[in-house]
Amino acid sequence: MPRGTPVYTVWGWVNAWTTVAAVAVSAISMWLVTGPMLTYMRRLVELSSGPASGTRLPPGTVFAVMSETMPAIMMASTIGTLLGWAIYALAVVAGYRDYVQLGRLGYPRRFHWAWSFLSPVYPIGRAVVVRRQAGAGSATLWIALAATAASLLLSFGWSFWLIFAVFDVMRAGLGTIA
Image (cartoon, rainbow, N blue to C red; front, side, top):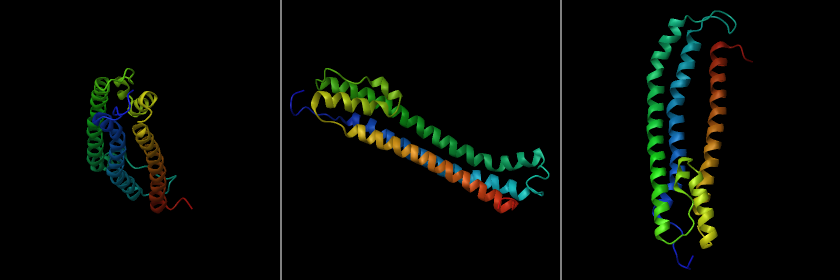
């Protein structure tokens, strides 16, 4: 590519930052669902009258507790899902628009926009293909890789934290785990 040809487009940046936005939506969804999930566990532990190996709660009681906490869990899930779909659609549209704009800038080889359907793949592949032709343009790759790493850390961290929080609720209520 001739020196001075732009290596980034607005749509390329939008596509790359949708990976970061998806991590933010995941964090918000996890935060919104944590309270109701722990409330559900606390209520079940409170209602348990016997030791851990003792009597069971009647199904009607468990259903009543679920009915109390399920609207909050469903609301958090719905918010996360709708925001996730909006970000996903934006990533696909941005990938397509970036692909077209790179063609207008004269790039003979472009990473196909359909890779946007696999969220972090397009900004990574785009950066590799543009860098080979222009000698620069790796920022979208690093944004997507950092967001993917953050997503993994967030998911594992939250999952482990939630497991320990549930065990704490059970231990506090039942007194059976030393």
